[in-house]
Length: 340
Image (cartoon, rainbow, N blue to C red):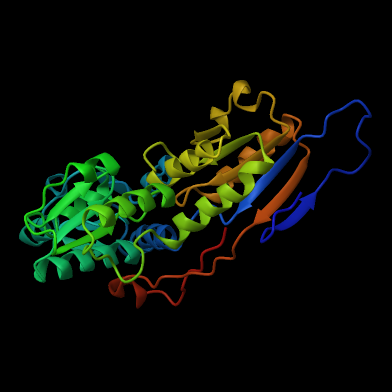
């Protein structure tokens, strides 16, 4: 029962199925997994380790995935929460989620050698915040409090920025000049939830303006659209991703909103029998910071549980790449293309 716009590749095992068996199926969503910003950030750490050797310090998790962080830690990266943990004059990498100007100033004061792995799409939001603040706008930032990306964006113009996380927050806003307002969003939000918040902002403040292009990143949007498309075809969705991954959690929420149970898993070891109970068809996807090998391990686990038919459903082809930071790009001839 393919949906319009989805391309399917089907694999089935050789040999007939027993007449009394129930054929159980996996629908593997595409696009899934690493986005261009994540590929770039991981490459930055690996290339820095190759060039300069261990240790290389990384402020916060380079991306929000436990397996990725553990792998890089084994390779020699040292992850810290704050720059005060980094020896003066040492080399430090800023994570894909970005940092505030205060963090950059602290790094300069402590003579740290900074390599910036901030996702270019996050940098876009930072630049928009600076521009709106300089023009005298009150900025409404739509996002999740305490998320690393939001903390960095808030730091660009703290006196001009108000954080909202839901429609109720919008209803509580008291703005001194409602005619001079702008909104920005965290890049990893739910499309539907953000749309509801923006709609309410426009209802309350008709003159509010937004960014020229949406801030929610292409990978977040594509993975959510794929989940929406496949939800009517499955009885459960398994999302590979860590609990602190915002975009992964949004995939679970999108599926549950469509009325289908969804579960966020770090890896196949977290699959529980109750997740698959009554599910003849299980869909599988991965958040933008989850490695593909974890997806393949989950597929193997499901096949061992009797899900012998495999379909890949592609909603949109992704071919996005970001160049490396200038201080690393000259050291390598390779430009890395996102592959899922």
